[in-house]
Length: 449
Image (cartoon, rainbow, N blue to C red; front, side):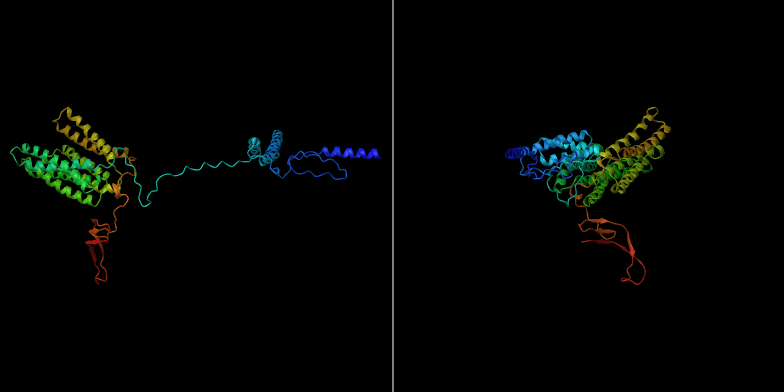
């Protein structure tokens, strides 16, 4: 009996020392007193993921994660994808950032692909911080002008100032001698040089934009051209002799009147730089077109040529003033249109090389040149239809703060910003408070203050 008791004690001690170690660090529970059947480990993974070791031991957690990943890899190769993913997830729980974590993520990715699970796309990196200065939201951003096409009121003032004062000087100098050119040329040069110096100083003093300077300059230019042509036509009527000072005086008067009209438009900021370029282009096409049309007509009187040119210039300027507000033109674009129009009108003159005195050749040349001017201008507009889109805007602060257009309908109206403008014939039914008779009232003047 004593020997049997000692043997039982030894067997119990050996059984206790052979208990397996819990890989999760949980305290072991002594086996029950009654003998039981040894439990077998199921081949599948439990539904509930394993919890990290408590207390957390990094070394032990990493060992558990490695074991789980090894088993997950075996299941993945055995195509037991769901269990493989479950073990890999448990490995990540044990060691989220250890060496086993990368293997666990790879197993999860491969298992998801086999199971047809679409992984969520990675979120895009956050945008870099906006370090631009804060802009005033009340100001309208202006499109960037094309290279080389920025406002330059000084250059425009020099050119137009010299042309206008040179015309005035030439008209005055033509009276100093029987040979009009002997007095007109030096006086024109002297006055032109003075105007080229004074005009930019005036533009700078009054803070005029390039568009305003161009409006005044275009008025003096085409006013002078039309005035000189008309005065020459009038004096040369019925075969009369045209004296040199007559067209010069007419050009000086026309330049002054045109400059006043341009000043009115500039004061009210009617046109942009692109609008003025359109006026200059159409004015030039109309002038040349009037002369080539005269070649086609072969009039009996030579003065018909100048009359045609004056009418063509006037028609071109008026047409441009009408269509300019609804167009998208810039000086760069109109330079290309004018170049193609000039090329189209110039090539027919090669016909006159054979026989310049032939009336038939002159008529053909005139007809083809007129059509070439129109066709070249159309081609220029077509080829540049997408050029400088959105850049036909007022200069300076006019784009950010446009003129108010709140004057009541009237022949002459005043806007709330102080600008006066010509309106139209504003006809309205006569108010019954003014008269019991039916009638119509014409608003002559109205304003908003």
